[in-house]
Figure 1: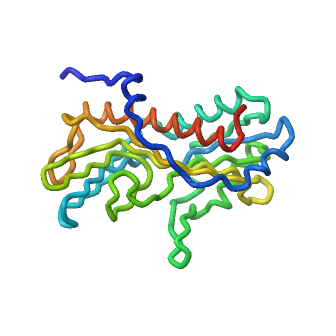
Figure 2 (figure 1 turned 120 degrees about the vertical axis):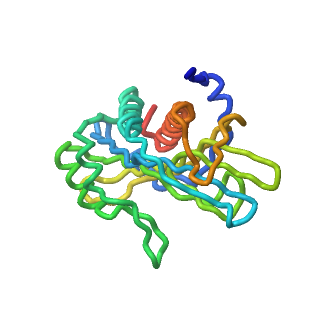
Length: 246
């Protein structure tokens, strides 16, 4: 089967939206001296969402697809390290992040406050900081938004494919939500954070039909290319806004 590759140039041209909340505590990073050690861990995970919002709630669908073969967390960590290393503000130290991702546990929502936090964030952060000797731990994670893409009552989080059909119209995007949290390794407190979302338009011929939202090998490859570009774009934007790069 011949695989259609979408060029990086055309994918970049398709990027539609970037938005997010205000930076918290960015001025605190200015107080950090040159040579401050940072370690990066990505918790974006290996589950991609395929989501469909139809004309009525009865036609809404959502499923998870295991994309561990993408190694997205490793890609994001390597990219973040490279971006930070090009500057003169911070010194990147590396740990065996694969093992530490598991220590953070799953992302859970507090019933009373609505806040989403990793089940064992304090333990994971302490273990990672101790092994790496870092002063700051940078956690890259998914974040939940309302429907910023099609203005329905659905929620979006993480990354994947989002399709919207209404009567005879159809639209679809690749999407990603990303938050970057800068944590003080000694106190475990958040120094600064930034969150954004991004999307890119999907081609009409890549529309996914069927109740189980099946994803072909060819479609997965195209989606991987698009998601990787979105991750890179968001990472560059957020690290710059957090003053982690020059």
